[in-house]
Length: 298
Figure 1 (cartoon, rainbow, N blue to C red):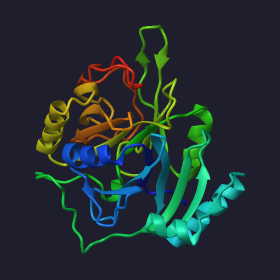
Figure 2 (cartoon, rainbow, N blue to C red):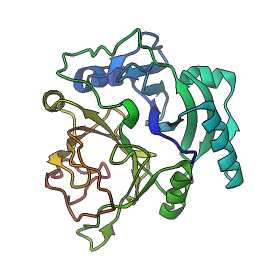
Figure 3 (cartoon, rainbow, N blue to C red):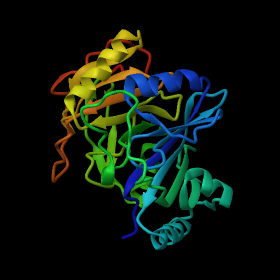
């Protein structure tokens, strides 16, 4: 079956690249690619040319998601699959393909209008090993699991689920969270690989395309150092340190310079063979700073 195999890269618009450069390098440990320009900040997590691109803009939001397929044949098969389902797409120009540092690319929108790209063969700079700008005990968890996960806006949960199911992801509701107003939040989580989830959606009231991006360290010390740097920089923390019930990831949520959240974590080690759902987290994740769309009693 033709399917995407990882969330390979993400693009964001941002109004202040200088703040992003400082935050990404000092607080997170991301490397700035050598061919970064005044208009685009390329950020590395591994030996790929980049995993994150921050584009200079008047806006502050996620501007595109890049989903990887394994081969050129898979890209052609995915294009046919989309066409058969009545989903419009276009083949990217040579210039667009080169800008993304891939060999092939199609562009479309998800049901909420979020720009979505499907690509094959990213540029992997094996001659340039990942070199973090600050000392790190380990590295980021990427490889076959991709960049991490995102929680996105969904105007129609059912249509969004069917769209990502068509791309090859699977999943379900994993939390039923009783809210103070009597409502029940039921976010949906989907995956296409060994990561517990690559994408989530279903939280009401989102204005931006993205609520948060999760990046995972493979060493607890690196998470702790990032937490210290965020705390010493007077950056908003939306959710304090805690452990999720679904993926057993130890994380905290802080504000990016674009005022969407970055979830930094360590230790994802659980992917059930059959679907489960939960009514809260194992510990922590207490709300500290409201207004970032994660005011959930986890």
